[in-house]
Amino acid sequence: QVQLVESGGGLVQTGGSLRLSCAASGRTFRSYAMGWFRQAPGKEREFVVAISRNGGSTYYADSVKGRFTISGDNAENTLYLQMNSLKPEDTAVYYCAASTRLIAREPYEYTIWGQGTQVTVSS
Image 1 (cartoon, rainbow, N blue to C red):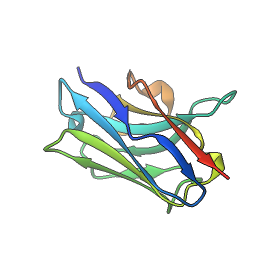
Image 2 (image 1 turned 90 degrees about the vertical axis):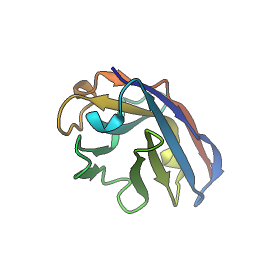
Image 3 (image 1 turned 60 degrees about the vertical axis):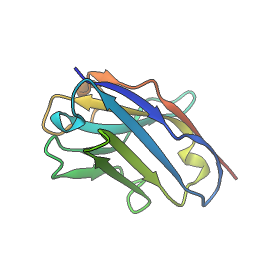
Image 4 (image 1 turned 180 degrees about the horizontal axis):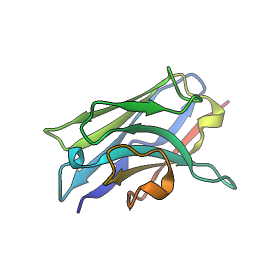
């Protein structure tokens, strides 16, 4: 099965940008539906964006629509999350995850998770 490692988190000011990476190994990430989730302290894990197993469909949470973009590089076997116009409420640990479903938007639908990367947006 695929293994996932996130990177690219950090500290950024309000309005800034970050690009998160999710490096896949073991299998191509295109064999899975992929998603990005985030979890802030004291809160439940929250859906951010998902892309279908065939890459043909994407779904964004309303809170990030128009600011975040999911993409993938087949040659690098890496999934990306471009985050623009960041807000303090985007502060969280961000996780990428893989699901054997065609598309998935709930955490329980994902069986493979990375270790997470911290994103902190200062006001």
